Length: 181
Image 1 (cartoon, rainbow, N blue to C red):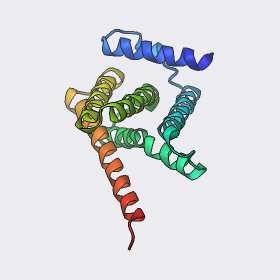
Image 2: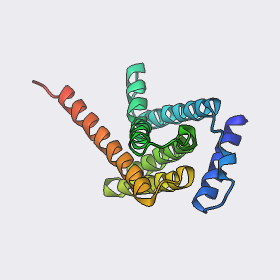
Image 3: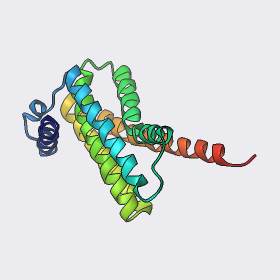
Image 4: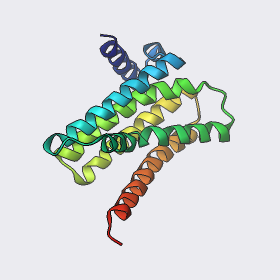
């Protein structure tokens, strides 16, 4: 199965990246088709997450599934916005796919781990997944771009903060939409 080989390669690439080993880039297809594959797997993971959450309740309708997948895709949207903004500010010429493809796999792991923490433990422990995501994005930015520590740290922190802000805004909008007027 190509999906399992792709996920295995991504895990090996991330292990090498976190270990500071050279050659981590070869485990990611940093091309447009590689990004399309990562996004397709990401969409499948978000779909499964929505379905797993709904197992104890009624089967969600199409709108509920799409809305849930959209909410789970917010980390990816936040990271892309911060990536493009950071590249623009620092006038970076590194290929976007060097950051985008590996970070998509990291965000898949984040969704799974955050979901498990939220359902099994809940509360403030979920923040640990945010810290872990920030660390992964920081290490990726350092390895893939060679940005200075401050820029890489800013990229990671802003990505996580924007993720939290987007989710909070979505939660507030959904609370307002559901309240009687």
